[in-house]
Length: 387
Ligand code: TGC
Ligand code: FAD
Image (tube, rainbow, N blue to C red; front, side, top):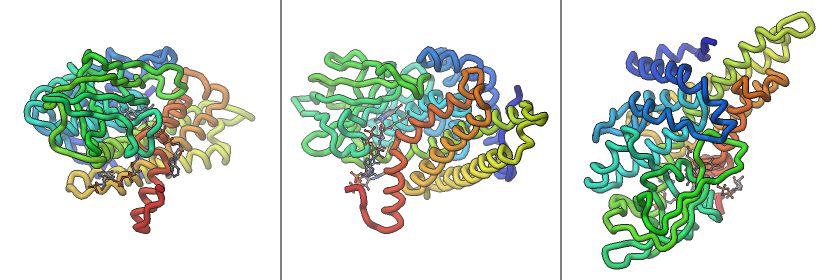
């Protein structure tokens, strides 16, 4: 099957030659290496570990980071990578998002020189895996209420608490753990194997099955004081990382929607009922037209988001709008496309249901749909409706 990426408004023409090259390389890799095995991993509930060295070889881990051996790609090229990875599966994009935006980005921007030297090249080469521990069992949308504590004792910090729903956490060599110290939130790099640090997989998921989602438990975990990220204090530390990752999710969700649309369109042209291809019925065409329109709108929003990022002008509120819209519309498209495939749409022979189930997580993590609604509402009115 040859993937025909929807590009109704010739957005390709607005990309540079280099951006198209990066996009096409990842697209081909996803077709050759991700799609053949992803359904089996999904059904088994395993992350395809075998793909990590290949992603690293292609330069996809921390592709937006500059220096320390990383390529420093622009916002659009980085976004296109995530779009293509999520065309394969949200779990693959999640792995790359967490590694690049939530682990490498804070180390690059808030880390000491020693932390950068130690971790960035290894994370880029896939020799080390990272995770980002912000959410707790009782504090999701409101991370400012976190209970994890870090208490200074001599030249060490002692961490106690628990983080839940953490992508890559059971695999991670280094965990970026956010904790309150003397009332202020700080980030700590906690290494695998540190006594009292438990990295425990969470089972029984219906969504993001080809992704590691785990708990981090910290029981009197001693970390050297130099493992604290020196460059940031307060909730804006983790929230600024989220701005980076959320912008990537806007691109990723669009990739999942593009995959669903392509599959449904192809199916509708081949599937015959009442003596005609179902693509010839007006109701099916209305669904495809709506999906194509929303994909096109997402593509434009993402392109401009990437260009604003490259110009250093991207705001968190713009990111919220792009993330919120892309996740909502991608989920609608995945559900509609699942319907176009009829009973076949529920099987692992096709992609639509896997994307649909994944997108239920994607619309929830990195700020739920409601939280992004309130962020946009606050930008529009100047009034905080969170509390
Ligand atoms: P608030 O008072 O608004 O802000 C506290 C400080 O942070 C600053 N700030 C930001 N800075 C950078 N980027 C942003 N997006 C920022 N948002 C806020 C703000 O200016 C302030 O700075 P300062 O200097 O005045 O102290 O904080 P709040 O407690 O009212 O919370 C606001 C709210 C609700 C929007 C925020 O808490 C939020 O975004 N909640 C959602 C939580 C969330 O998204 N969690 C995600 C966890 S990680 C994850 O899901 C990874 S999934 C990865 C994968 O698998 O792909
Ligand atoms: P809650 O905050 O309890 O929200 C429940 C409901 O209440 C939602 O519908 C929400 O929109 C609504 N709500 C909450 N507050 C308000 C309000 N003020 N007004 C109106 N409605 C409101 N976290 C990490 O730190 N690192 C990770 O790597 C990570 N990976 C994840 C991977 C997966 C697969 C999943 C599912 C989650 C992951 N998360 C991660 C956690 C994720 O960020 C949280 O689940 C998310 O922020 C929502 O928090 P919650 O689940 O506690 O929901």
